[in-house]
Length: 184
Ligand SMILES: CC(C)(COP(=O)(O)OP(=O)(O)OC[C@H]1O[C@@H](n2cnc3c(N)ncnc32)[C@H](O)[C@@H]1OP(=O)(O)O)[C@@H](O)C(=O)NCCC(=O)NCCS
View 1 (cartoon, rainbow, N blue to C red):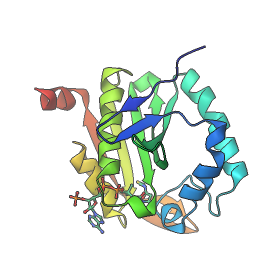
View 2 (view 1 turned 90 degrees about the vertical axis):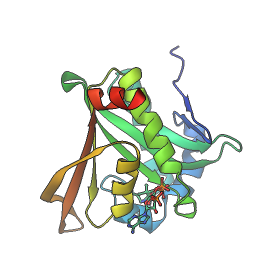
View 3 (view 1 turned 45 degrees about the vertical axis):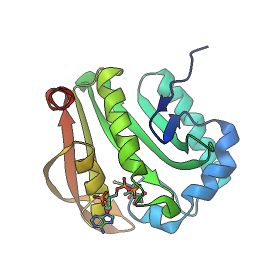
View 4 (view 1 turned 120 degrees about the vertical axis):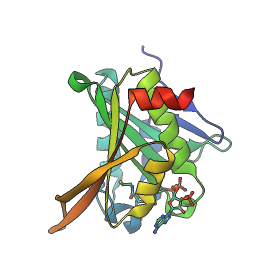
Protein backbone atom coordinates (compact mmCIF):
# COMPACT_ATOMS: atom_id res chain seq x y z
CA UNK A 1 0.00 0.00 0.00
CA UNK A 2 1.25 3.50 -0.83
CA UNK A 3 1.81 5.64 2.26
CA UNK A 4 -0.59 8.61 2.08
CA UNK A 5 1.28 11.90 1.73
CA UNK A 6 0.63 14.44 4.45
CA UNK A 7 2.11 17.91 4.82
CA UNK A 8 2.66 19.50 8.22
CA UNK A 9 2.99 23.25 8.71
CA UNK A 10 3.21 25.42 11.80
CA UNK A 11 -0.52 25.12 12.64
CA UNK A 12 -1.93 22.72 10.06
CA UNK A 13 -1.82 19.22 8.76
CA UNK A 14 -2.82 18.70 5.12
CA UNK A 15 -3.81 15.10 4.65
CA UNK A 16 -5.87 12.89 2.34
CA UNK A 17 -9.58 12.66 3.09
CA UNK A 18 -10.95 9.29 4.21
CA UNK A 19 -14.55 8.10 4.14
CA UNK A 20 -14.66 8.68 7.92
CA UNK A 21 -14.51 12.43 7.13
CA UNK A 22 -17.83 12.49 5.25
CA UNK A 23 -19.98 13.92 8.06
CA UNK A 24 -17.45 16.48 9.22
CA UNK A 25 -16.70 17.60 5.67
CA UNK A 26 -20.41 17.96 4.88
CA UNK A 27 -20.91 20.13 7.96
CA UNK A 28 -17.92 22.40 7.40
CA UNK A 29 -18.20 22.91 3.64
CA UNK A 30 -21.97 23.36 3.64
CA UNK A 31 -22.14 27.14 4.18
CA UNK A 32 -23.51 29.12 1.26
CA UNK A 33 -20.59 31.60 1.47
CA UNK A 34 -18.26 28.82 0.30
CA UNK A 35 -20.50 27.88 -2.60
CA UNK A 36 -20.84 31.46 -3.80
CA UNK A 37 -17.23 32.00 -4.89
CA UNK A 38 -16.35 28.48 -6.07
CA UNK A 39 -17.25 26.48 -9.16
CA UNK A 40 -17.15 22.82 -8.15
CA UNK A 41 -18.72 22.68 -4.69
CA UNK A 42 -22.43 21.76 -4.66
CA UNK A 43 -24.94 23.53 -2.42
CA UNK A 44 -26.69 22.22 -0.42
CA UNK A 45 -23.82 19.80 0.17
CA UNK A 46 -24.90 16.27 1.06
CA UNK A 47 -23.19 13.25 2.60
CA UNK A 48 -23.47 11.66 -0.83
CA UNK A 49 -21.52 14.57 -2.33
CA UNK A 50 -18.80 14.00 0.28
CA UNK A 51 -18.72 10.25 -0.37
CA UNK A 52 -18.43 10.65 -4.08
CA UNK A 53 -15.77 13.40 -3.81
CA UNK A 54 -13.64 11.42 -1.35
CA UNK A 55 -14.03 8.25 -3.43
CA UNK A 56 -12.68 10.02 -6.50
CA UNK A 57 -9.74 11.47 -4.56
CA UNK A 58 -7.89 8.25 -3.86
CA UNK A 59 -7.88 7.31 -7.49
CA UNK A 60 -6.65 10.78 -8.51
CA UNK A 61 -3.80 10.71 -5.98
CA UNK A 62 -2.74 7.23 -7.01
CA UNK A 63 -2.68 8.22 -10.66
CA UNK A 64 -0.50 11.23 -9.84
CA UNK A 65 -3.23 13.39 -11.33
CA UNK A 66 -4.57 15.48 -8.49
CA UNK A 67 -3.38 16.23 -4.98
CA UNK A 68 -6.50 16.92 -2.88
CA UNK A 69 -6.07 17.56 0.84
CA UNK A 70 -8.21 18.08 3.89
CA UNK A 71 -6.89 21.08 5.81
CA UNK A 72 -6.91 20.11 9.49
CA UNK A 73 -5.77 21.81 12.66
CA UNK A 74 -2.57 20.16 13.85
CA UNK A 75 -3.59 20.33 17.50
CA UNK A 76 -7.17 19.06 17.41
CA UNK A 77 -7.32 17.25 14.08
CA UNK A 78 -10.50 19.15 13.16
CA UNK A 79 -11.18 19.66 9.46
CA UNK A 80 -11.29 23.40 8.77
CA UNK A 81 -10.92 23.51 5.00
CA UNK A 82 -9.77 21.89 1.83
CA UNK A 83 -7.13 22.57 -0.78
CA UNK A 84 -5.49 20.81 -3.65
CA UNK A 85 -3.52 20.78 -6.85
CA UNK A 86 -5.02 19.58 -10.11
CA UNK A 87 -2.00 18.34 -11.99
CA UNK A 88 -1.46 18.51 -15.73
CA UNK A 89 1.51 16.17 -16.00
CA UNK A 90 2.07 16.76 -19.69
CA UNK A 91 2.68 20.45 -18.98
CA UNK A 92 4.33 20.00 -15.52
CA UNK A 93 1.68 22.46 -14.37
CA UNK A 94 -1.05 22.43 -11.75
CA UNK A 95 -4.01 24.53 -10.76
CA UNK A 96 -4.36 25.25 -7.07
CA UNK A 97 -7.75 25.53 -5.35
CA UNK A 98 -8.87 26.00 -1.74
CA UNK A 99 -11.72 26.83 0.61
CA UNK A 100 -11.81 27.56 4.33
CA UNK A 101 -14.55 27.17 7.00
CA UNK A 102 -16.30 30.53 7.37
CA UNK A 103 -15.63 30.81 11.11
CA UNK A 104 -11.88 30.43 10.42
CA UNK A 105 -11.58 33.17 7.79
CA UNK A 106 -8.96 35.85 8.28
CA UNK A 107 -6.60 33.80 10.45
CA UNK A 108 -4.04 33.16 7.72
CA UNK A 109 -4.83 29.45 7.51
CA UNK A 110 -5.45 29.38 3.76
CA UNK A 111 -2.23 31.28 3.07
CA UNK A 112 -0.35 28.79 5.25
CA UNK A 113 -1.91 25.88 3.33
CA UNK A 114 -1.28 27.50 -0.08
CA UNK A 115 2.40 28.09 0.70
CA UNK A 116 2.77 24.45 1.75
CA UNK A 117 1.01 23.21 -1.39
CA UNK A 118 3.25 25.35 -3.59
CA UNK A 119 6.35 23.99 -1.85
CA UNK A 120 5.06 20.44 -2.32
CA UNK A 121 4.23 21.12 -5.95
CA UNK A 122 7.73 22.25 -6.81
CA UNK A 123 9.82 20.12 -4.48
CA UNK A 124 7.95 16.81 -4.51
CA UNK A 125 5.70 16.80 -7.57
CA UNK A 126 8.43 18.49 -9.63
CA UNK A 127 6.08 20.95 -11.30
CA UNK A 128 7.20 23.91 -13.35
CA UNK A 129 4.18 26.17 -12.90
CA UNK A 130 1.32 26.51 -10.40
CA UNK A 131 -1.61 28.71 -11.30
CA UNK A 132 -4.82 29.76 -9.57
CA UNK A 133 -7.94 31.74 -10.46
CA UNK A 134 -10.53 33.66 -8.52
CA UNK A 135 -13.70 35.59 -9.26
CA UNK A 136 -12.95 39.30 -9.37
CA UNK A 137 -15.68 39.63 -6.76
CA UNK A 138 -13.56 37.54 -4.33
CA UNK A 139 -10.51 39.69 -3.54
CA UNK A 140 -9.66 37.73 -0.36
CA UNK A 141 -8.63 34.83 -2.59
CA UNK A 142 -6.39 37.09 -4.68
CA UNK A 143 -4.78 38.23 -1.45
CA UNK A 144 -4.05 34.61 -0.51
CA UNK A 145 -2.40 34.08 -3.92
CA UNK A 146 -0.25 37.19 -3.55
CA UNK A 147 0.77 36.30 0.00
CA UNK A 148 1.70 32.80 -1.18
CA UNK A 149 4.15 34.31 -3.69
CA UNK A 150 2.07 34.15 -6.87
CA UNK A 151 2.03 36.92 -9.47
CA UNK A 152 -1.00 38.45 -11.12
CA UNK A 153 -1.15 37.34 -14.76
CA UNK A 154 -4.28 39.07 -15.95
CA UNK A 155 -8.03 39.35 -15.93
CA UNK A 156 -9.93 36.79 -18.02
CA UNK A 157 -13.18 38.37 -19.10
CA UNK A 158 -16.38 36.42 -18.40
CA UNK A 159 -14.30 33.24 -18.13
CA UNK A 160 -16.59 31.52 -15.62
CA UNK A 161 -20.32 30.89 -15.64
CA UNK A 162 -22.12 30.29 -12.37
CA UNK A 163 -25.85 30.13 -11.80
CA UNK A 164 -26.42 31.61 -15.23
CA UNK A 165 -24.09 34.61 -14.65
CA UNK A 166 -20.73 35.19 -16.30
CA UNK A 167 -17.85 36.23 -14.05
CA UNK A 168 -14.55 37.92 -14.79
CA UNK A 169 -11.72 35.90 -13.31
CA UNK A 170 -8.25 37.00 -12.14
CA UNK A 171 -5.42 34.61 -12.83
CA UNK A 172 -2.22 34.23 -10.81
CA UNK A 173 0.77 31.94 -11.15
CA UNK A 174 4.19 31.12 -9.82
CA UNK A 175 6.87 29.43 -11.91
CA UNK A 176 9.72 27.28 -10.69
CA UNK A 177 12.45 29.90 -11.18
CA UNK A 178 10.50 32.42 -9.07
CA UNK A 179 9.91 29.82 -6.38
CA UNK A 180 13.62 28.91 -6.29
CA UNK A 181 14.67 32.56 -6.17
CA UNK A 182 12.32 33.12 -3.22
CA UNK A 183 14.03 30.30 -1.28
CA UNK A 184 17.52 31.89 -1.49
C1 LIG B 1 -10.87 32.92 -0.02
C2 LIG B 1 -10.66 32.16 1.29
C3 LIG B 1 -10.14 30.77 0.97
C4 LIG B 1 -9.63 32.92 2.15
O1 LIG B 1 -9.37 32.14 3.31
P1 LIG B 1 -8.71 32.76 4.63
O2 LIG B 1 -8.29 31.60 5.47
O3 LIG B 1 -9.58 33.79 5.22
O4 LIG B 1 -7.40 33.45 4.01
P2 LIG B 1 -6.18 34.13 4.81
O5 LIG B 1 -6.62 34.45 6.20
O6 LIG B 1 -4.97 33.29 4.62
O7 LIG B 1 -5.98 35.49 3.97
C5 LIG B 1 -7.07 36.28 3.61
C6 LIG B 1 -6.60 37.64 3.20
O8 LIG B 1 -7.64 38.30 2.46
C7 LIG B 1 -7.89 39.55 3.05
N1 LIG B 1 -9.27 39.90 2.78
C8 LIG B 1 -10.39 39.44 3.35
N2 LIG B 1 -11.48 40.02 2.80
C9 LIG B 1 -11.00 40.85 1.84
C10 LIG B 1 -11.62 41.75 0.92
N3 LIG B 1 -12.94 41.87 0.85
N4 LIG B 1 -10.82 42.46 0.08
C11 LIG B 1 -9.47 42.31 0.10
N5 LIG B 1 -8.83 41.49 0.96
C12 LIG B 1 -9.60 40.78 1.81
C13 LIG B 1 -7.58 39.34 4.52
O9 LIG B 1 -7.41 40.58 5.16
C14 LIG B 1 -6.28 38.55 4.38
O10 LIG B 1 -5.20 39.35 3.98
P3 LIG B 1 -4.13 39.96 5.04
O11 LIG B 1 -3.50 38.80 5.75
O12 LIG B 1 -3.19 40.73 4.21
O13 LIG B 1 -4.91 40.81 6.00
C15 LIG B 1 -11.98 32.04 2.10
O14 LIG B 1 -12.57 33.31 2.19
C16 LIG B 1 -12.99 31.09 1.47
O15 LIG B 1 -12.98 29.89 1.74
N6 LIG B 1 -13.90 31.61 0.64
C17 LIG B 1 -14.94 30.76 0.02
C18 LIG B 1 -14.33 29.75 -0.95
C19 LIG B 1 -13.42 30.43 -1.95
O16 LIG B 1 -13.66 31.56 -2.38
N7 LIG B 1 -12.33 29.72 -2.33
C20 LIG B 1 -11.38 30.28 -3.27
C21 LIG B 1 -11.90 30.17 -4.65
S1 LIG B 1 -10.77 30.95 -5.81
